[in-house]
Image 1 (cartoon, rainbow, N blue to C red):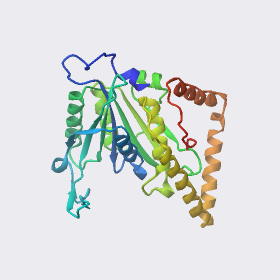
Image 2 (cartoon, rainbow, N blue to C red):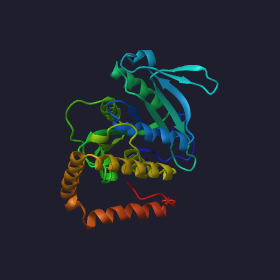
Image 3 (cartoon, one colour):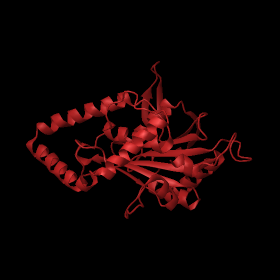
Image 4 (tube, one colour):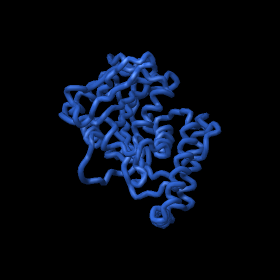
Length: 301
């Protein structure tokens, strides 16, 4: 688990002089890095479920072009008009039963000054005694909505890869703020892992509850947390049924989905082996040993 790789063993208030218990930073940004809002929705759910408390905001005028990332208008219950500006919020979730807290970072991908933005965020992370970073994202892919959501877990850190069974990143090309922050965090000496979900490109609209559900199930294992995902699982199943109905009304889309299914099944056939089954069973037993059963949740999408 990342908690074992990134967090030092402490009995009380964290490292000497830090004034804070150790924390793992979990990050999601809306925009280019977040197909179907899957990653930002996952972190938003954790904020609610874990009772995270806001500690800081980053950005606004320093980092955003408001013609590109426009503010939005909301009405309070009393009818008062409120302007919500694009920004990045940082919340902390206390975890007294564990040796670390969670620092949850969720915002809109900045428009300007990415280097300064990352430096400001990592300065805050240092003040909050962050010992490791988990970055989440979602991308559009040629994957069928009827199959389990493909997830990638990667890290440039060999120790993290060995401990988590993660892969070395191989992507080359344009990147978003998530990719830049991963590189900067690694350069600062923080163990860093990236978790991405694939969203079918033909149903790219937000929300994408099946991808959000898949991300959260993986984060549960990485961060040793347990949250109630029953309702989200039901949303994921309803979403899949809805896409089934839409695809059934268009023969071309139905044929395309079938083609994607056949291609993915063929690609994964060697993986549907005793090794993959054993690996999934080991994860199940680990959850049982930790007292983190499925709690009546629907099957994993």
